[in-house]
Length: 416
Length: 167
Image (cartoon, rainbow over the protein chains, first blue to last red):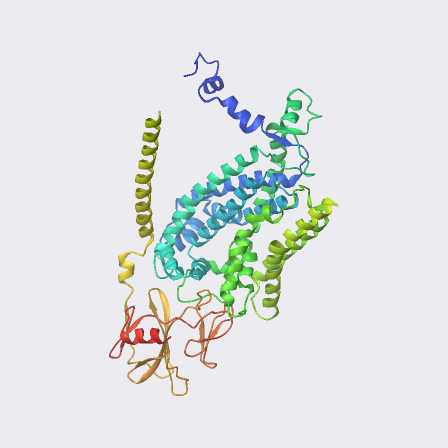
């Protein structure tokens, strides 16, 4: 045991037992962040804030929510919305945050892609981030089910049905996941467990891992300059705060982040107060009906791009069913971003505007994702089906073919 | 030293074996916890009396929480010897009313004699065979048994087994 002496205050008392000074150094005061970064690097802290909001509002909602097919709809739309004081606020904050968190995740991801922050040395940051994205998707989907409205029910029906496309075990797997022959009470209760217990624990663990994975390769910067963090930190600590290219996480970086969080919160509460409807599908205010399908089923906006890839292939090719092609393409779309560090094999870590071909690739990808998102919402008939088809093809080609080719060309160019 | 090291690796091996067996049993137990409950499985049988049905009438009933379309074919409707359920000399189309694409419920359009799924535009003919759009196969036929004029859904009767064997 360490030498415990009479403490001269509460902090000292804690320091002797928990080494709080050392802990704060590691987490805050001596965690070095490059100076040359812009507002896009604040997205991580905004996501942390949003996750905290989701967690706290979720706790308040779960006190009144009832995971039972007979009670769920009213517990949300009557009890929480009308009876619980400020229940409407928690619900709208939870709903809006669940939607906006994906907007910020996408900005965060695209920032990483633009500045090459997934590259050599930073692969684990990228992979843990993508894992977070996938688990967040599962969390969003399981939460979307809980109010047990029409769209909740049919989204569950369609998504669980997708597992039926897995060869041999598909049909049995669907029944196993649902716990019944159709989406019903056992399905709701197990998704409730996933949404409020298992998945949040998994998310928190991956968030911790995601933060930890930043420590050794450190955060990238706007010009992708390779910094000697030890050297720059020494400079800073020796008093040359101007000459050093890094600042401590606290107070330097976080104080700047607080500005962005404040601005973001203004936007967030504007949405919560005046535009909450965008996160609430009107069809979901009809109670679930297993015997009547809504005319048009679509997911929330943040899943539209991959939904469009799923249904983009609408005709059979050489004996392979359109459904299976779509399912395979959908499967690829879910995992392809994980492989980004290996699809882009160029060692050069540079922002996109200093890599001409990659720059074009980046913007084509972004436009294609927007096209997929827009057409994912439209009914898949006539010309819409063809736009969806070509956009899906472009998406797959961009990642599987074009990106590796670009990096090979870049490598050759560098040798000359 | 050599002896104690082999003892140590034996301990490690023994612990690993015990943990693996325990882990495997736990996984089986966890898998079974997610399986449908006995009460859910028991509710999987539904009996329908078809004697009151009119020619050309479509009836939707619920079986295992899925919609089942039962259509008594009128004289002018094409018969399908492979898929029709024949009871009392009348042909019936008996199918699970879920589009084989993504599981939505197609609507019956009597004038066109088609089942149309609004979600992704799939169409099925009067016998439940997919004729247009993304559905990969005809509407599924639920396991059934014929008892006089009654149809028992959930049990595999000889007529169902024959139908499956021919398909």
